[in-house]
Length: 151
Length: 151
DNA sequence: TTAAGTGCAAACGCTTTGCAGTTCA
DNA sequence: TGAACTGCAAAGCGTTTGCACTTAA
Image (cartoon, rainbow over all chains, first blue to last red):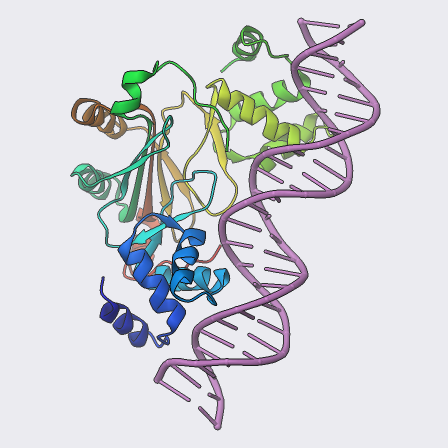
């Protein structure tokens, strides 16, 4: 989570500690579930010279090192990034207001246990995305309305 | 599943029954988890004039009607399509051999029950993607190796 | 000192869209 | 007949890559 952690991870794997990498790291660690573009914007508040492609390269490297992960929920738009250790693999997206809630219940753990025991599958990552209507929207809407495929 | 079902769904919603739509439908209903490009290839075996954009438009329409859905697992590549009613929302992807297995256990149902009761969330779709090593690959590999971010 | 990292711009792959011609109802 | 649909080609978007310059170690 800290900058020191990043320094150790990079150095230990023979990678350099650079300005863009530190900046990207602090954004991802501070605010989960941002897109590469959003991360770049925040980074540029501090250092306007940082390029979007460097953000992508930093994120890719962090993912390779297992520090960060690209959330596998396909929103049709850009990918979202978060710390790898975050127990926030559980996403609930409301199709009405678009809000994404993060949850960390024991659901994911139970899934992992089931697969490990019954299927011989070594689980490394679980992405659970539930789409529907959140409690607020379900009060004001008919649940029978179909989602539109607008992007 | 049948062609008649599609005719009814389209007609009932004021949409036309056309050659490309029937062709796309039969491919999606026959083989789940294909990409738009793959669907187009199969469709062209029968009618080489069908355009890829028509495949996309047909799939979008079917999704709007709730007949078909775009699997939300982001592979970094193209989206995969399947029948909406299919109880195959449960995907296991091996990061070594790339194989995607479909499972329909009671796991998804339990997730739905939990969210409905405890969070007031009206669940419409559940996408569960588990990434790791399948039983075959885990025998021949060290599970500690990190996944690479190659696309 | 020098290999690793960066900015820039161009290319990439998947998907969407504008338009003119076609076709189902 | 006429609105819905299609093929085609071009544009759109997020992401990756080649290259020359810069920088951390």
